[in-house]
Length: 111
Image (tube, rainbow, N blue to C red; front, side):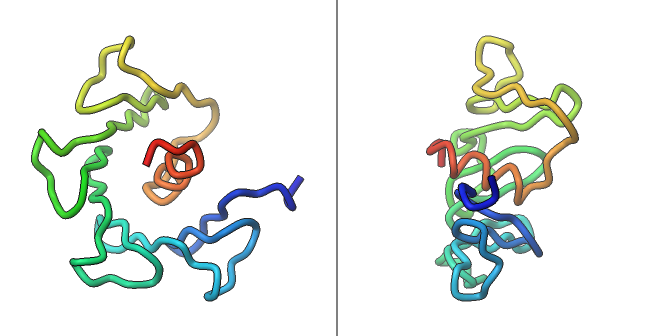
């Protein structure tokens, strides 16, 4: 049911619950960065999302890679791996956008 929504994704923003109000923006995805609230300042960057990988902060170093998303298999892997035993999620349906992937991992408590 829509009232049970944890997060809503729209316009590269992640909102609290089923809202799309400016007052309920939790995160903004801008130029490959996931930022707190509506900010797009580099010091507010929580994660970098690039080429299907999610990194800590403003980094694309291999050591900072938290998750990898393979849109062909629609699976999310821990770290930079694509080994089946490292998969944390196997999804059905269409491939996720970067904002949808971030919202899913946030809702599950992985980020």
